[in-house]
Amino acid sequence: MQPQRHVTGGGVDGREQAVEEGVVGHAASMATPPGAPPGADPATVPQVAVPERVHAFCRRYGLRVPVLEAPMAGACPPALAAAVAGAGGMGAAGVVSDPPERIAAWAAEFRAASEGPFQLNLWVPDPPADDPGPIAAAADFLGRFGDPGDPGPAAPVFAEQCAALLAARPAVASSIMGLFEPAFVARLHDAGIAWFACATTLDDALAAQEAGADAVVAQGLEAGGHRGTFDPAAAEGTAVGLVALLPRLADHLRVPVIAAGGIADGRGVAAAIALGASAVQVGTALLRTPEAAIAPEWAASLDGLAPEATVPTRAYTGRLARAAPTPYVRAWAGPGAPHPAPYPHQRALVARWRRGGAGGVDRVNHWAGQGAALASTDPAGVIVERMWRDAREILG
Ligand SMILES: Cc1cc2nc3c(=O)[nH]c(=O)nc-3n(C[C@H](O)[C@H](O)[C@H](O)COP(=O)(O)O)c2cc1C
Image (cartoon, rainbow, N blue to C red; front, side):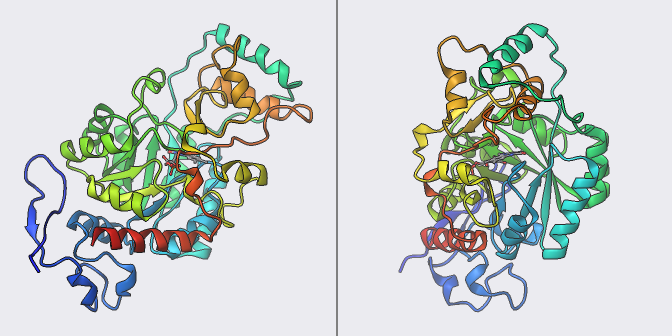
C-alpha cells in the first residue's frame, strides 16, 4: 500500500505543511494515538490520519473529540452542555439574555455535572438605532397578533454580563455580532480564558484575529439561529455557505477555524475538517435531544424540516436569524409587512407581545438550521460520539 499524503492544515505562510503520514488506517492499530492523553480510549480520540491542527486544538482545549456544542441562548441548559462535554466535546451556554446571577448559576450547575470544558457566549451590543419610525410600524404590525403585555424587566447590562463571565472562568468566552473591547480581551487572557469570535466573512474574521481572538468560528449561512455578521445591515448581502467560507478563512488566518452551520453528522464533520477546520460547532443537530428539552412544538417543527424550508428572518429580534417557517415568521415575509424594527427594539417588542394575551406571538423562537432534518432525538452524548466516529471513518 502506498503512503498517503495529506495536508495537516490551512495557512498562508507555510506554518502548516503537507506531510507524509504513513498509510491511512495505520493509527487504528495503535494503542493510543499521538497527542492523546496517556491511557485514553483509542476509540474516542483523534487518529493520525486526522490533520495535526485538529489534534493541536483538542490538546489545547482538553477535548477528546473536536466537537463543540454551539452556544444557543434559550436552548443550552447545563444538562446538554454536560452531555457534550461527557462525550469528549465542549459544552456551551449562550447567555445574552441572562443577568449575572443566572450566568453564575449556569456555570455552577454545569460544574456540578461535569469536569469538562465549557464556553460562555455573549452578543456584542449594536450601536443604538433609535429612529422611531420602524419601531412604531413594527409595533403596529404586531397588533395583529394580539395585545401587548407589560414591558417586562430591563435587558441585562452588557458590562455586568462581561464581569460575570470573567468570574465564571469558562475555558472559552465567545462573541457574536462584533468584537470584544481590547481591555476585556486582555482581562480574559490574563485569566487564562480563550476568546472565540464568530465571523461570517473574511473581513470580520481578520478583524477578530487582529483584535486577539484565539480562534474564529466560521459561521456559514446554513446555521440555525442568529447570523453573526458584524454590520447588522449586511447580513443578507454577505450570506456565504460554509463550503466557500471555511477554506477562505483557513487560507488567510493564523488562528484555528471552527466550522459552524449545517453540520449534523459525521459527513459534515469530515467535510469541515477537509476544508480546513480545526473543530466543528454544532447547534441544530442537538436541539431534539432529551437534554436540550426545548418546547415540544419547536422540536416537532424540526422533524424532517427541509433545508429550503428554513427561513432567514428578522421577525424575532431585528437581527437576521434562521428559523422554521411558523405562521408568525411567514406573516413578516408576506405582502404589506413592514421591516422589523432594528435590534434590540424588535426583540423588546416581541417579548412584550409574548407577555400579552393568549394566542399572541409564538411563545418561543423556532430557530432551525439547514441541517434540521438530520437532527436526531438520541441523547446528545450518543450524537457527538457517533459524529466523530463516522467522521474518522471517512477521513481514513
Ligand atoms: C437555538 C439557537 C440559538 C442560538 N443562539 C446563539 C447565541 O446566543 N449566540 C451565538 O453566538 N450563536 C447562537 N446561535 C448560533 C450557533 O452558535 C451556531 O452558529 C449555529 O447553531 C450553527 O449552525 P447549526 O445550527 O446548523 O448547527 C444559535 C443557534 C441556535 C440553533
